[in-house]
Length: 359
Image 1 (cartoon, rainbow, N blue to C red):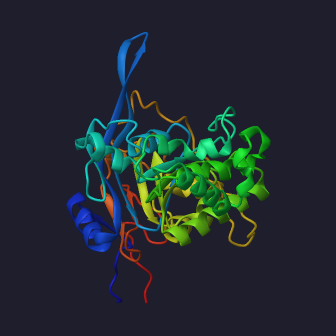
Image 2: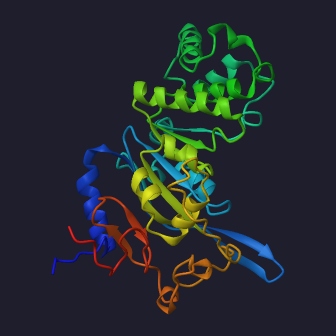
Image 3: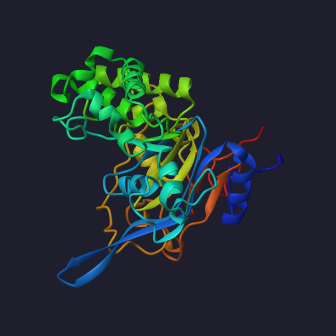
């Protein structure tokens, strides 16, 4: 009989971290380990703790786009705010280029903040209509005065950035209400580029735009990445957009990252049942390879009182008694290095404990 193997094998957290160290090396720009964040919430029963983030592990490589997907309320925006150093994690570590930002103060912290910028979801709410385009782009330089100390240098850089994002240099005197939605988002991107960042966090950057304009903005982001070697964390509900722009994908559910891997591996061979359900809901024009729709039962549990063990078990058709005992182990796809899921019963072409097809 042919020798049998399993597609997914259980690995310890230490083993996973070691493999990550070896594969990423000096190319890693962000490392998140076991990050947790809770908020105190007052209610009829008194004050409770809302677990917005619960043991997040994440890595970002230089020049790549990491897609972050999940249902509303799963913690994506809280994670973005934590990575932007707008929220301080209760547990775990965040390291930018090997540096813990929460140990820095003064000029050192200011220098690190320059490296990480953000493009917001709503271009109508994120820009001040009382300011001109030049004032919006140049506002970060009022804090980081050493970057362009001379007024004429700032004026020249504003025109360069406008041209870089596909706007006219003469638009510098216009106010945001004189721009269309797509042009406003280009202006927001120009503002994010003003400090020459290494990483841009894009929080639903095209969801408020028309379909044709979405494509233009996505192409712009791709061109900027190729030209400037920028890394993106791309948060989106639109799976087709994520598949188009992301190199790797992280799937989030109720404050935890339940699956990560290359875009092809996660989309074509989802290992976690939640990921499998997400992918089945994505529209496709390929009738022959269309997935059967998986309808999840029940409601998303409250982060005020998450289920024991696997957070997804209350909605999972494959859950067993063991799923309630403890958090699932990290299982690694032996055929796709870097494809990892937290699950006792991983899905895919070959699940845990199931023999692989004979060669």
